[in-house]
Amino acid sequence: MSSFPTVRLRRLRAQEGSRRMVRETSVHASSLILPVFVDPALRKPQSIPSLPGLTRYPPEGLLPLARRAERAHLGGLLLFGRPLRKDPQGSGAWDEEGSVPRALRSLRSRTRLLLAADVCLCAYTTDGHCGYWRDGGLDNDRSLPSVARVAVSYARAGADWLAPSAMLDGQVQALREALDGSGHSDRAILAYSAKSASAFYDPFREVEGSSPRQGDRKGYQMDYGNAREALREMAMDVEEGADLVMVKPGLPQLDLLARARERFQLPLAVYQVSGEYAMMKDAARAGHLTESRAVPEVLTAFRRAGADVILSYYALEAVEQGWI
Ligand code: PBG
Image (cartoon, rainbow, N blue to C red; front, top):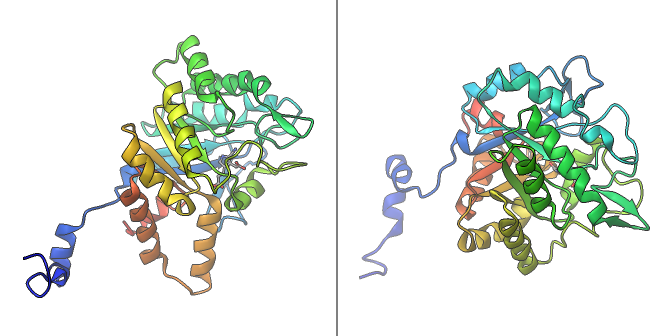
């Protein structure tokens, strides 16, 4: 008998204890990575207006945050930097004295947290694009050596994971070759593979000052209407040597995560991006939802859809507040 009235699915929902026992999905702190902003112009930490509750840090000022992340047993940190001055080449991105290498060096010998670093040029070039902009488009192949150079610089400073986010064709292969060629075959690549040209990155671009000066990113980031193409992007990154592939943004692309889970055996990551975070913060402030219930619901949805790793601005708060 597999139907009502013999079967009543509500029986196991009746008590908290049985609900907890039969719950299929859980979120652990160790699956969470907290994105962190580093700004070399700062002397002390400063709150971020576009991302309520978040702070940006001077390059050598991350240790207290790292200690909190350790105490919370977070999976790790993902570092974003910016230069003191932008230039057409985005040379600040691979500068060994740049914000990310400085932050990595200051943390590396003091923590066993996993340290990941975003690899892109958009915060460093005067054009504000993720590679070199020419005649209204991104010059893919001329940009590849530069993003590879950035990855090597971050690896040298101690990054465990390099996360290329420029959506250049061939960027994973370029990074893998450059890392292997520079003695960093032990460093992993977290590929932003299915990254859409999304409206949900705006608060991030405000923090990073990384909005394109002209044009937009639709010529390189994916069209959010395309699921089959997203699977091709991921398959190609796997082929090029990615250790993990990522879907971004998160909630708007939950289906891509679920489909990737069925298709790939390697670990999957999802990025709950700045706009998704800001939206929930604002809704909570307006009294439309309660974070202690809404945040675990969303994080659980990412895990249920198939994510092993979740990058979220809520990572630390969710653990410290006991929401997960
Ligand atoms: C850099 C990069 C972006 C994000 C992560 N890496 C911005 C963009 O592509 O414009 C967005 C993250 C977020 O919104 O939280 N290319």
